[in-house]
Length: 268
Image 1 (cartoon, rainbow, N blue to C red):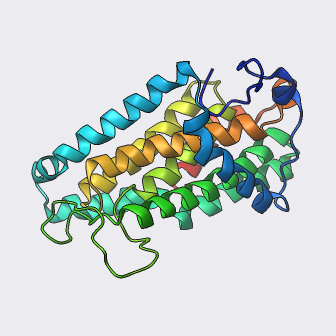
Image 2 (image 1 turned 30 degrees about the vertical axis):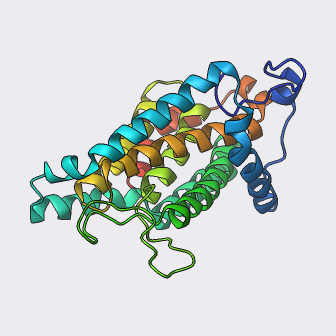
């Protein structure tokens, strides 16, 4: 059982009724869905089952270890102009201005092709992206971590910048959180052919790494962002995905695994 899957409160097992029940996912319901998601996302650590606890422990331990070594790892980079320039280009697909057109393209293509799965991918991608923005913004405001090029470069937390809502803080990486949330939705929606999740996660990994090599974030920032983003995408998919779509024929997977996905990779 994965994190974010619907479970029965009495048995602690996956609830087949919740899984099979079609969920209404529309642009009109997006704001309401995100509000509902936020409650579940923030309470999920307290509702985790024993088999899920190991993932929370692993995530916390890895993040703590990376934070402890962030200053050292940042100094291992050559930090050349070309490195910074290329990293900035690679990181663009993880920005909201790239991801929003990307998820809208999924939805529009599904509407034009009358492909409900492709259309749902766009809607769930938008929902996951909105949740990722909210969660990363809250974490940034709460931690107030300095970026690698700020202060002494040690990535101090709670720097008290004087800003009530410090959205420019370093922890976690917003780009990493956002791209992994959308990639997680795409990978869950199209597990076959294998090339689709491979490409989706490869693009997300490239963006994540570029935020580190571009000296915009520390290693712990991008890894934490990736983990949070993947969880959000996983949560949204299992909560909103309409299972009856799995039994319907769809050519969207063939399109995405071919030229279509290759063109969209640079757009989100």
